[in-house]
Image (tube, rainbow, N blue to C red):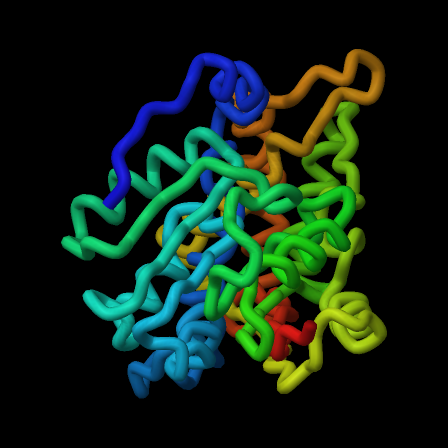
Length: 307
């Protein structure tokens, strides 16, 4: 595994990302899907929710032994799924992320859990990959496009670095993903004279637009689209409430005061959340037999790279 330290310039560029609850806030929401995306009656049968990241990893079984890029690797969850599905010790996997704190967490998490000589971690940007042309057998950019001002640059770079006929995977959310949670976060922001810019979320580049971009472009030939569109049920227990408040907290870095543009911190809103929002959480759960309902709407596109 690669070793390395990030320069002071990198930390300076990422300084706005170092605040309360910012690191891996998207992973907090992912953990909610993985824990609660099942019906109440499924709990008694010990059924597991779908893991869309695992399903995406299984789409790369045919690339075992090849060179795979995970672009926007976050905390390495997708890399772990690759290692669990047969790539460990066989494939050359490169995890790339442009957030300094994610790079450090990647190093720590994957170094501690795996001994894989061909696993490399890089600090880098999706818009300008430090990879040679036609050097990868496959590339994945999971839940990345809606964070990018110019998603076409990701498509262009992936098209460049993946070999002809190689496999590419892109994923995105639907605009109704975690609809209730997002609306409650809006209420929290408004109560504190703040706003949440929606363009930072799924409305910027939803799953349906991702499909169209892949189909209408000349870089990729779509092979399949895998959808997940179902209700998520969070139990109105202490544990369920704690998980829900972590999701609300994950939106806090987006909340900015309307007048001063000051970024809110969780300490600014915690009292309101634990008083007013808890009442709303419990009230809605009471209508659904003790479960707070929300919506999981996401999916990924699998395509062949064309030249």
